[in-house]
Length: 321
Ligand SMILES: [Zn+2]
Image 1 (cartoon, protein in one colour):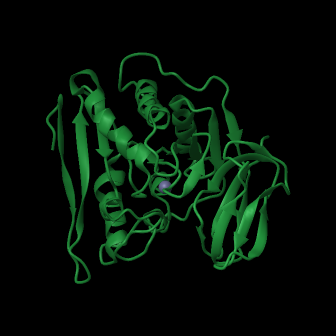
Image 2 (cartoon, rainbow, N blue to C red):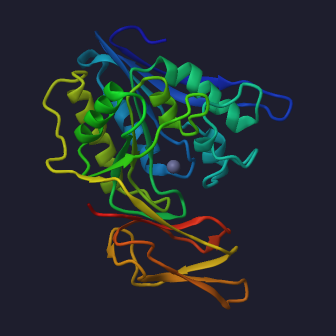
């Protein structure tokens, strides 16, 4: 849609179905003057994760098509209904999590049809991909990190994904374990990997906050990866000594109820296994259970608002190798 050396913004249609009127996916295609790979950046899979959405808006004006090689596809907002509806985790129309339904279904609900359009029209046409997230509107998340599938997609895809993760420049790199089912990769990034496309996930930002120190590292990281891939001039700025995280521990709630973190507990801090993080109460304020650190390590994610459902994750701790 864009001529070489130009950029174009528009939307990809997600057609209507008997259940709903469909939606659209706002995108920008920056087509460099010189040939090169297609790098796709996805923001807004979760509509209340604002750092990636704002970062792609900034990148659009930072990318000079005359100066780059290859094509950058910016998916500004994968889940427009969730953004406009201000929902966390789930789309408002069908209460499904877009990042759990890939590769989607052309005859499915709105969320499944968004995933299908993204898979077929965007991801399948990419050579490299980044799926960019933050803590959702109710999650504290620190520090920022990149992640990649360390055991899926074959040696070359793994090596290229790791190369991207390191080049992005964040100090923490999470290595996802396990293989993927190509027929049902579930996650957006996994959909790329299952198709032989190197891909990384990024997490930067938290709690619906608009903070430059969470947004700018995304902009810088994308530019650094573009330099690593020879899509932009200059040297990349990789993390000099990143910490690779293989193992993560999850604390979940056994109850529906009211989560109240202890005041001294903050994401990013080191915790000992068993350290108290807070309490889940019933709706009248009676304590139901204490939540404790599920392992020794860095508290990566901490639920930041009171609503909690049975089975949901309240805290994620990364084991420090
Ligand atoms: Zn997310």
